[in-house]
View (spheres, rainbow, N blue to C red):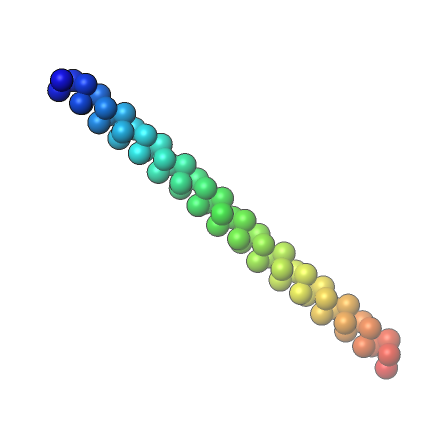
Length: 60
């Protein structure tokens, strides 16, 4: 009986470790995606600003 309980506990611990590792990997990927999204949004805003400045210069 103790061996079966020990085996179940060992499987649960291993499953927990696996889930934690997967969670960390997903969290890291999410951080990368957020960082890239912020960079792209900033780049887009800069380009829109440059385009507006070019239009303003042509109108003058």
